[in-house]
Figure 1 (cartoon, helix red, strand yellow):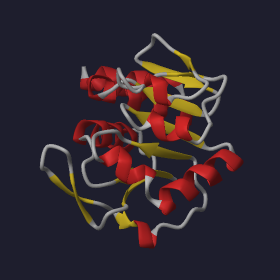
Figure 2 (spheres, one colour):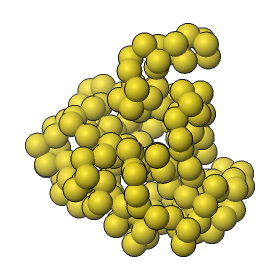
Figure 3 (cartoon, helix red, strand yellow):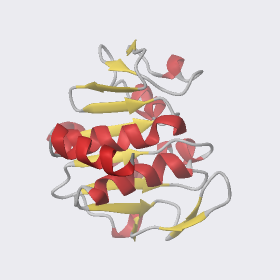
Figure 4 (cartoon, one colour):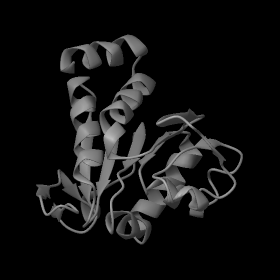
Length: 177
């Protein structure tokens, strides 16, 4: 199971493009509203989460996804359910995926030390100890980081590839052109 965490002020494309890519791949993904069942994006679009943080149970987790956006990233970082999920994902070697400003959450926890990573320009300083990648989407071990909304579909496809295979991701890419 994959869980994507939504907090007030999230970047809509960075959240919903990966959800779309994973559902096209027939992967089990649930959105988790950490600030309630209905969560409003940074551009004012309200999204109904599949479950709330109170309903979230960490079990059989293949990956967690943290979309960026402001103040969504700060709201994710300040949420204990999200912090606990990150810690458990690290100990379980699950994929931990973050885009835009959200890789800063991982950097602040010291999880990117010695790893290749990328974030939205200006947030590189928050990727404490990371080697800053020049790629739009970067994979290092169980961490996938991406630059921002402009590469949200690519980010989602990379998650699909890591959870299935390259052929599945390439097929989806071809079908969406």
